[in-house]
Image (cartoon, rainbow, N blue to C red; front, side, top):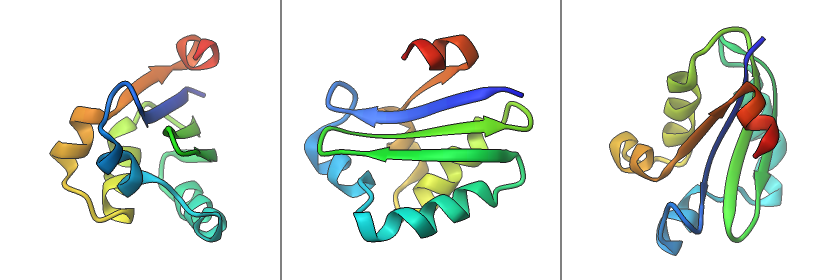
Length: 97
């Protein structure tokens, strides 16, 4: 199963965007439940700090678009704007990251 690391950080996005993508502690459980409920996501972890938000997903198949779409919808962000700020790593690159 592919491993995906999808994120946004201080190197890829201004603080205004990072603030919009951040998850509060009160949002994490429900957000993680929703993320795990996506068709191609087997398991997931959300990491959200003041400098970065990262989603680590055990995928049933390569489908990063589904995760990115979910993130943009969850935070009510324009998909193209969000996509310009994100980075993706797969499998061993995700582990190294």
